Image (cartoon, rainbow, N blue to C red; front, side):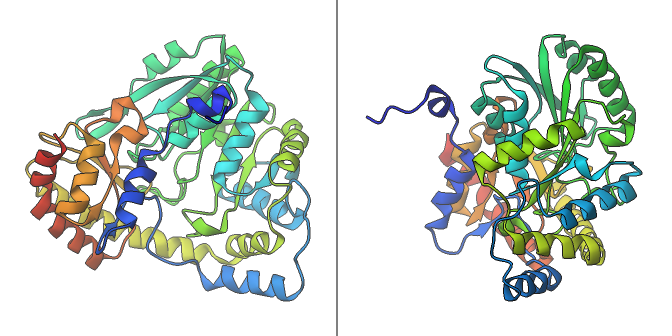
Length: 390
């Protein structure tokens, strides 16, 4: 047997990927398992990348990203969130995932206590586990048809020996959003104890009640131990481009740069040009996506609420419905069975933590006709899938 490191051996395989790879080998499957919209990247980004390639933008870039893109992101965040960030606060990364890994590698020593508000996309906790962190989840709970965080329970877990807390808001998979007043309470508590806050803001622009969700950095002083992780994947429909960024204390920028050197060296220059074009000229594209998602959300809500056995819980952001079904207790088995009985691919709740077993995630970032087809199939096959999964 190959002797891998204990950290590598301890990683949990992605159950989302396990279900998806089962379905990818089958015919006539509607895939709603990944966090990826149906719509392609804007021609604005494609044209910018093509222009950069034609101009021979084929070479290494600065570890922290092109200055033009960093400046663009600085101005974007300052404008949208009413901040006063300096360009030294911005680091360009090869995806939001790499931004999370850089945060974990920069902050975590073996044995450090890491708190994660869950359910959560599994890669968040696993990033800090790779770096040696010891993970504790504080679960969201359904309450009066919405997801709710027990703030006192979270604060009790944030003791002086805690290195960092990970908060994904809007949340994947639930769509929960942390209100601004709760953010302020958590920030003040973490200031008191010197705890880092890692704010996963990838879905910030995909918010049901405004142009952007409440943002932790709006409350911050420059010296606060807060890192914002973001990505071009969701709001700008650029999942395959692999481009993201970090915003945090300027003192961390050289550390992130050095870690980037030993991870990927740099993000591709022509991809960075595509990202810059979207920030500078793609705001209308974001608004079109927001409008599409509102329609898809309303359709999803209506169809799921019409199924008696489904417990629909309203999301405040992102583009998922995370729901339970009466009688379904094995989410991974159910999702695999549903591929056969209905031809619909969902993500199992267990992928997002033990507290999420009994739920499934559906990505509703799809055209209405495809969603209606998926729900027709789901209604016809979910009862048999429950039986087959037992």
